[in-house]
Length: 141
Image (cartoon, rainbow, N blue to C red; front, top):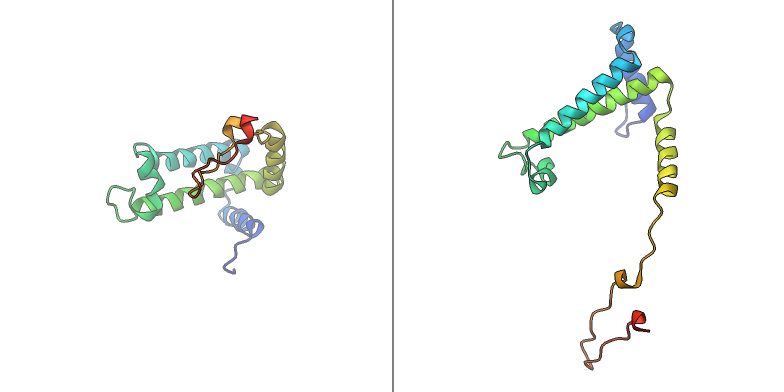
């Protein structure tokens, strides 16, 4: 495999991995959804009692209480587990995960349009350094 990972290739590797171990009977949509939920909870557990600052720094090793990157490694493992179960779930139900994501983004863009800025939200220019005059404010008109 190259350094650039292909999502479809990784998904097929997961399918093949399970097939070689004869795990298909256990990879039902219900079981995979449950496993996905458990792995997402394990990801959440890493951040459970961290402050916002600690959680933002967890990948640098600074947010893990001095664990020297132990939390960062756990985050990577849990992210991989979540994605692996999601890809296996999609394979079983024949869902194109990227098409589903694209369609969801399209719906969200319609559902949550970019808000128009009202005059009081428009950033005001800083006062001019020379001349001491304040630039004209379009909202004053």
